[in-house]
Length: 356
Image (cartoon, rainbow, N blue to C red; front, side, top):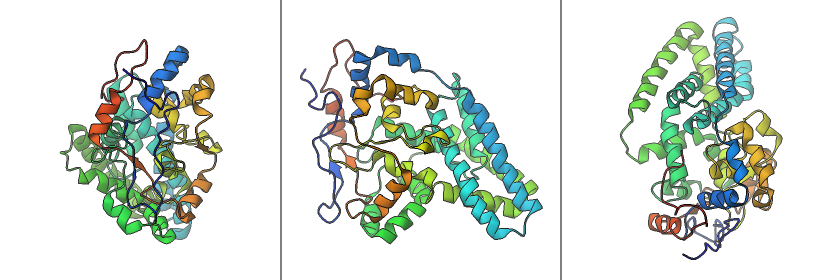
């Protein structure tokens, strides 16, 4: 079995899609790069497996973050109800940041990185969902694991923009800004378009959120609930903590479809920027992802990466070479064939298995 020509960094030979020049996403004729790079790294640095496990501190961070956000809802709903514009400002700065943090926590629980028990991880995800007022944790889990399994696969990766998003937004700076602002809605729509039946845990999430929303309305009032809703919309939209949605897979360079961020925002947002490292090693919790890069710098330091989320947002909205079409995609058949295209000595043949 011949070597994958992308070895060892697994950069593709495709050119990024340029709005105005190209009409569709960039098309790769091989599988996503992460499983093979993981095996290449393990071949050279088997000590990386010592980083596998979970970080129980995630549970305490979740409890604290949920308590702070509900406390803020009570403050503006019952104590300071007349401070409307102050509430909006705090909802963006504090609430939006905490909502973005909840997204990181839910992401960790998707991969069972908060506790060794899968059920406990589900509970932690529900706890993080309290301050979001919309049942997102369990649906995100399903969609996110599908994204890992089928990264870039047309019709299967729920992280890909839909065709109508690409057509409507185009490359207009204002429309791109509005698209980023509406990103919470876009993510829900992408999941709904797949037409899959709700899972048992998604139904539990809905019932749980109805109950917690009712309690918030009762104890914090309507304005407290509105504070949480604004926090949700801002935190997953035009907010610095949400820029990683653009940073992760939008193609800033030819041949590279996943990007890491190594800026100071990782300190608050639990290293969510280490996205290449995460896709390569989904069994490693957030607190140990920097150690992956430190152990195998020759695999990561030579890849393009970001150091400023603000610059990523500015580039995406103003640069004419970036738009929703700036993604790399592949057909399902190429994804399957590519998985069987390469065998690392000492490892079993790669198959199309979920990465959780």
